[in-house]
Image 1 (cartoon, helix red, strand yellow):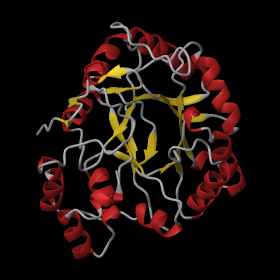
Image 2 (cartoon, helix red, strand yellow; image 1 turned 60 degrees about the horizontal axis):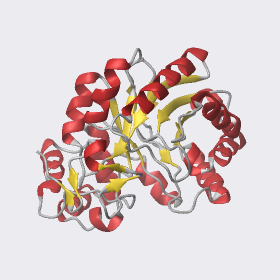
Image 3 (tube, rainbow, N blue to C red; image 1 turned 180 degrees about the vertical axis):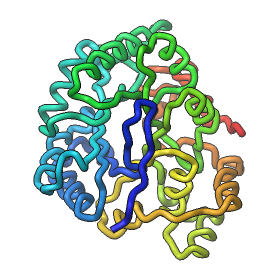
Image 4 (tube, rainbow, N blue to C red; image 1 turned 135 degrees about the vertical axis):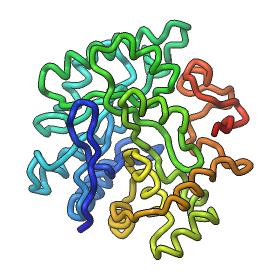
Length: 313
């Protein structure tokens, strides 16, 4: 069984560097599949699970953890706040009940956008007030002892700069889309300076992009590992947490068996996004009008146009 390294947050708590992402795609929940995936992951050495209220499967994640018989103290659970910020405490308590796991290790603001209804996201220019108020409620939760660490997700340099002056407690992580096509170089530098660790969701993007990429294929062949292992090793080696998802037991095991990459390999992977057409998001939540859940790229602080991302070194 692979030994998974840990990172230390700015509050002194530790988190496994590799976790199991529990977002199952377009279909919400898929409870039986989530339960079986988590059981397999636990059997194969995973101790870090990343879910969210929005995923609709907190109950199954918690059930698998309890069924495993592994002590709660050995498991790390991340979940995320709903986008409706009207009652942060109520949303947290609902997640805690669904997970039924004594406490939550890490609780994140899932998106900076507040959603008043199922379709109405805040679009007003001062919409940052919603996530500032939500963060203040998050800080109160931390003092309750029911959650160990708090952080954010999908925040940019812009939205972090709006939030941080109002923080009594600095977010421990910021979870964002991050992979060789979107290395988030500027954001990583900013977060490093602030003592905020980045977590990569969708760290493998779409396999057809990375598994066929010549640089990654060559490294994988030389080291006799999978392209996924190369990408995840690159991510962890640069100091970021990863939460890949796989229901296949063989790939699960490979994803937590990381390898040491040379400085030459690291630099080569760092440069993939600078190739023509390679600097891009690989996710589907972008609307044709250049918005994500009601906010423009400009409001989100994302260096992007409707035609794609703008490369940065």
